[in-house]
Image 1: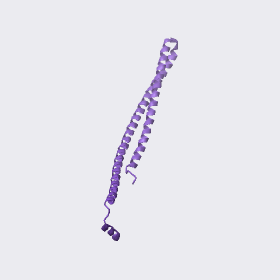
Image 2: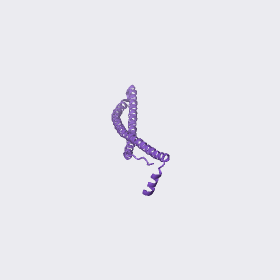
Image 3: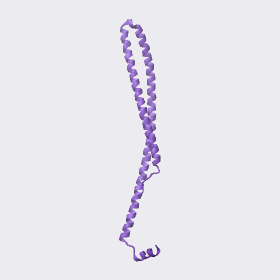
Image 4: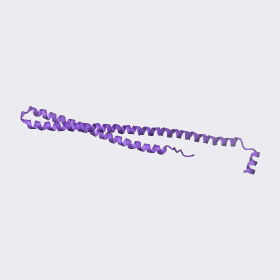
Length: 158
């Protein structure tokens, strides 16, 4: 019995490799996005802590230099938050682009898989028909043995 070989197998393998690479890229993008979100949350928490420290310093009028210093730190922290938010948005966009790329390539792989499966089914049907034909030929030969005239023709001409 011949082994099944699809003409689409090489194409399938290439797209599958691209799909795997896109999946890895998507995972890296998700990790970068999560890291950016964590940095943003940490920066927000730090800013909130500095605001609380500044409000406590307002209670004591003697700490004006501390208050001015904390206001400068808060302004720097707010600028950092804006930068982190922008970085988080970029990471999210990159993640979305990687997800779309992965889905597109993966859908191609699935389509090729379906085509190969259809080819495999056709191949199986063809092999079963061929096997059935050979079994029919054996049955015909077994139940309808050749006549003597046919045997002598085969011996003399064969």
